[in-house]
Image (tube, rainbow, N blue to C red; front, side):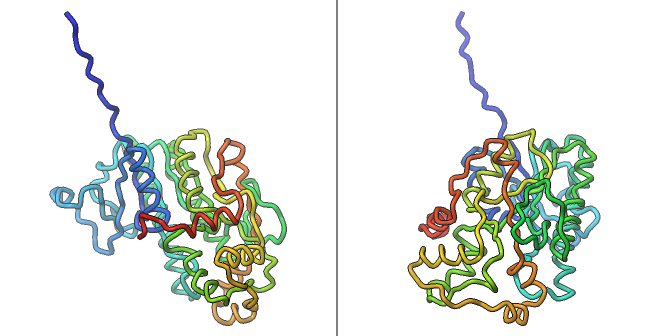
Length: 328
């Protein structure tokens, strides 16, 4: 007697994702779907978390409301059992506007408090995920001039550096629970959609762009395509843990970035923004986010064998300026 063998597909890997509506999150969802991963989205809510047992049944499929300031931050955490990984990307935009005292508190709360709340939730599961990837930033290195910076470099000083150290430390409950924790230290991300490039393009297309301050400060950048590819690479590379610089292997000075962007849009870039004017308009944010120098390189990614699709600034800008079907 011949028995037909029925092939049973393995279950879809389940990835918890916060910040799914942002530039990285939206692109990552598409990439996960292409790999047949199921993304479960955490959606922020300012309302008290409803712990009614029936509440989870009326939620939007694949979405779970959460409030990092609430106790518990997510109702029915059992829905997060047996995740393969969690990726935490949400947080207030550091470069949105001037850093008032209240906005600094909002930035810190949205990043540090939310990371701690999610780390504690994952650590408390009976079957926690194998991996927890948490957004961070190369701002942790502070203003370091021409110094080459990799993951072994010491943190710097300033509001951003202090914030990033607290941000990364907030994931410790997950580390203590045996979860592999990776701190994604993002550089300036160049891609279509909302982000740094979207803010620069209108000015440069009018021919009004130019260096910020002296233009000698180093800017560590990475294309959006390489960000997504690196995150997927890290998910697969189980030996990678701790801080990882998500930057191109070829950082550029602000003047070099300015020249490359001007050439990409076929306009001159001869109108510099003086440092004093930036400080007058933006205060501390200008010094730490626009005029600060961080020459970060992705040593751990390169050592692990990751291949960049856009290793040069010209390649990254060309890719970012192409029409993007998902955004049209």
